[in-house]
Structures are given as C-alpha cells and as structure tokens.
Image (cartoon, rainbow, N blue to C red; front, top):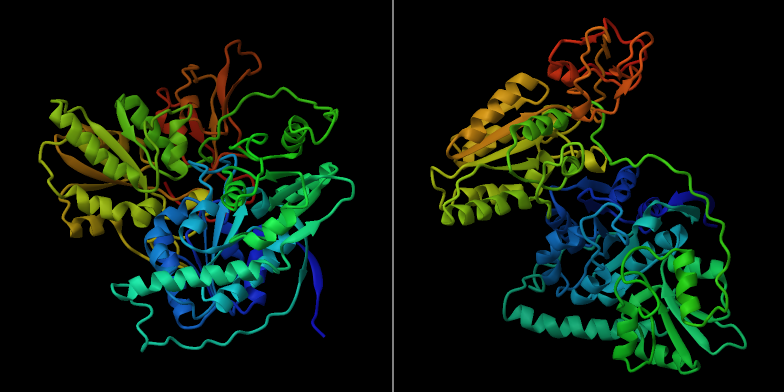
Length: 607
C-alpha cells in the first residue's frame, strides 16, 4: 500500500514534489520570481539533477536533452523567461517526445515582480502545447504528474501555467512515494529531432495531429470538473486560483472548472454550455478561455465584467458578478486602513550598488540606461538614476543604438549603461560582442558592470563568476579577462566600497571620448553575510548636511540628541553591517567605526 502523508506546501514546493513523485530526473531553470523556488526545492531530492542555467534558453535546451534520452524533464521560468527560450521552444514542439517534458511558466497578474503582464496561456497555444492550470498546491503537484503522463501519451511538450499568488501560497498536499521512470535512450536513427526542411515540414502535420488527439482526450479528462447547481441558467467557466475565490462567494451558478485549459474539447464545451442560457468566463488578464469558446461558436461573456489587468480577488469578482446581474447586492465589507509612511523599496544595508549610484547621481550624468536586477531600484528615490529598464541585457544594445542616433544628431554627450553580473552572463555577452561591430573611437559610452558575484534579486543563486567568491560554486569566469579576450582594450576594475577611488575612476571614464568599461566589484552583503564592526555618529561633529542620509542606507536617519537642538544623523547599530560608505561620504569625519561587533556576527569580508 502506498504511503500517503499530508503536509503544507507552497505551489512551488508542490510542483517540485510532483516532479519527484513522477520519477523526474532533469530539472532546470533560470531564477526568476515567482518560480525560483521550484528548482530550489528539487535540489533537495538527490535522485533529480537540478540546475540553475545561464539563461532560460539554455535551461530549456538542457531539459530538452534530458527528454531526448527518455528522462522525464522539467524547466521552470517566470513568464518573460519564455520569451528568451522561445527560439528552441517553437522548434522543439514539432518533435516527438521521448521522456515526458514539462515547461512551468510563472505568470504574474498585477506585476508583483515583473516588467510586464504577458499571459503565457497565449504563448502555450502559439507553441502548440497542451496547457494545465492548477488552482491550489494539491493540484499543482497532481497536475505536474498528469502533465508528464500526457506528454508521453501524446508525444507533446506540456505547459503548466501557475501564477504568483499560487506559487507562494500554501495549502495541504497529500505526498506520495516516488515511482521511477526508466530512460529509454535517444533514438539516433530516425532523424525526427533534426528540424530542417523537409523534416520540419512533415513535423507540422505531426504537431497538428497530436493536438487533435489531445482535444479528443480532453472530452473525458478528469481534471476538468463540472459542478451543477439546480435552478440556475448561468454557467461560469473558470480555472486556476480564481475557482477558489469564486467558491468563497458561492453565487447561484453552475461552474465548469477547467484543469486542461488548452486544448478545450469542442464537443464537450458545446455539450455543457448548451444547457445554459448564459455563459460567463472568469479569468485573469487576457480573455483566453473566452476567445477559445467564442471560436467554437459558443456565446459567452467575460472581460465585459472583469478587468483585463491585475489579480482578481474576491471583491473584484463580486463587483463583476454584481454588474453582470448574477448577485443582487454587493456584500458589505469592513475595510480598515492604517495610515503609514509611504516607502519605496531600497537597496539592502551594505549593498555595493549604493555607492555606485550615489556617485552617478552626483556626477549629474543625464543619460543612464538601466537593466534588470537589484540595481533596477536605482530608478526609484533616493537615486532616480536609470532612464530606461526594458529587459534582461537590453541596456547594452539600447546604449549602442542611442549612441549612434545621437552621433547622427551631432550630440556626443556621455551615455552610461549599467548591467549586473548575472545579467551579463544571462544575455549581455552577445550585446558586448555587438558593441565591437562598427565601433567608432570617439563615441562616448561608459558601461558599468555591477559584479556582486551572485544573482541577488532572486535569492542569491550562482552565476558565471560566483566561484571567485564562493568555493561551493564551480563557475569562476573573470569578467574583465573575458572582455579583454573578446577584444575590449579599456576595461578597468574597482572596489565599489572604495568610494573615493570609485568616484575618481567614474569621473575619468565618463569624460573619456570613447568606449570604456568598468567592472565594479563588491560582494552582495546579504548573500555573503557581510558584517564588519558597525559605525556610529558623533553628534558633536555632525553638521546635519545629510550627505550620509542621501545614500539611502536603511540604518541611517535623522534624530534628536539630548541637549542638541538641531537634528543630527544617527546609525542603527543593529542594522549596520559596516560597509563604511556613510563614513566615506561624510565631509567632516563625524562617522566613526566601533572597535568590535557587539552582536553575534558571521563571516568577515573586508572593505
């Protein structure tokens, strides 16, 4: 008899568990919220090879290789990561499947941690993949296993679409024992994996036929559930987490909850909807299910009542149902708000990026092209030093195009671009190579590579240079030597915590009439447990100039000192990690370092 245990799991943890129970062997990802926890958790299972790859395209390709050899394989990424992986994905979906293949995409309704709100259900259909949409952690685990079975049964890659709220929320899950799935080894004789004409032309028909078979299978699939309620002529079609929100409201409607949202059985859809006078589709973001039903000739409504953007919480659904005439009265909700001080997200205490952007702000450089990473916070107060943030690695290409356009307009004002080390390895390298193409010696471009030797924004996963700081990581690529090997002849390195030296170098390179690159080093204070003796303020010396406050470091604030009328700066010693930046910017040396750490500390990393 199979052992069953009930535990609380997040959606991410449940997916990891489902992959383990299904006999999964190869799990890959590039870290990105909200799905970063999936591979963090598969690492706990020794039977699974887990990898954070250089970018999403590489992660997908590693998982494809595993699938080719018959290993059940999974790749996880946030929704915009699928854009990076699209090139191999759109071709891979033409090939047959050997080992079950699952792409997990973390959509982000409401843009909790993303630069856009794309709906990857549309991408799944575009790629001719079956799509599953779980509603809680139990289904996240079960659908992972189901997707791998469907993948092998119909020879198709599958997509598991999950949203931020479900990734991070917890619910009870029944966990079971692992069932091994033997590899079958790659068939090298058929040529079915070589997607070049004429093979790929033939593959188009194979892809079409397997989707048609999957649609017939969808007629009877058990994860699509119909809940009938007597004395109602209204059917609500929904999926995912919204099903639970709808059930909380408990309107007088029947519900068709879809687990497999693509393809939808046309026969089943017509059979069910024909019994109702009114069909309403409840879904977040794009009208995906609504459009699918309308393409079948089924009259339905949806986005007429529900927003096309953001999450749909219970009050949002209530409002939509009220406007649709499904519920007669809006429930009274007691809303209590506590006034708080508005705060922007800021760099962590001791973050090495802080001195860099403090220097850039004081340099009064007009154009600074930003990128994706912790340093994206530079666009917000107190720095406001990024004029553009588009996508991973985009800062370099944008800077080149901007520079060329300005030269054509007889404007050679300095342009500064910033990019992190994780982003550099993710998608920056091709753009750096491209910088050398049609390069003019007098084009004023300064690129600052912020090298904290980790992928910090998503929790401190490794990147190509992490091994230079951390013996546990086997990738030890030196960015400066790599760029010089490519062909760049002006690459400088600086310790970001050495404020005066960094300021001098930045001024020199920004003024230089040509292309220069600065590799600004400094350990992520959080990842590498930075903790030097804390700093304190001597209020008798402090002149209240707020130079330290403007660096935006969390331990710093202005307070009243006993016997002193004027507000003076102060440092919370429990928060200070001893990075010394505040002391370096103080014009009167009012900030001093204590002689020792008065609390339990960690590994020391010198400044």
